[in-house]
Length: 207
Ligand code: GAR
Image (tube, rainbow, N blue to C red):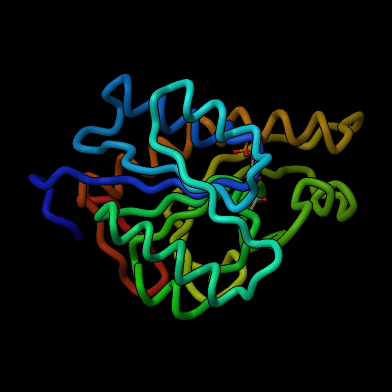
């Protein structure tokens, strides 16, 4: 748990559209995540649409390209940028990279991710497609702490949506995304408040 009195500096990592990053920025702007500020948005792709959206809102952005270099080199630079900005909490928001043990260790218990399925069902890529292909009747999204496993860290919050008979990957993704934009700020607010404890794999709210 963190000290509730300290201002919490968020670092958001994106790879694409950045709608979850915008949802977090809106929530911070509207005072829904008390004590938090967005100190840095990092993209591993220079072409990420989310970068322009972040800049439009006056957020500090940084591109740390992954292509053409080793994973270790890329991660070291990313961790260096987070450290330099004294980031307290890292929020992965459509960041399509698996973090190494070293990265996770550097920010142990201080990295969150949002995933478009009800974990532990359908980890990895194309979670909405996986849910449809499996014939699931319900799906949703999960905010969880990041550990060394693929989408496997302790679950902070979940939201469910129905899978309809006429759903396509696009329609299901849109229904889940609407929930993501509500759930991620809520979950970040809980973690920033420090009013939780992790018991084994369970994240318990003391609110
Ligand atoms: C979101 O649906 C997010 O849950 C998913 O990528 C999308 C990013 O959208 N993340 C993953 O699949 C991670 N495994 P956004 O860039 O508009 O936030």
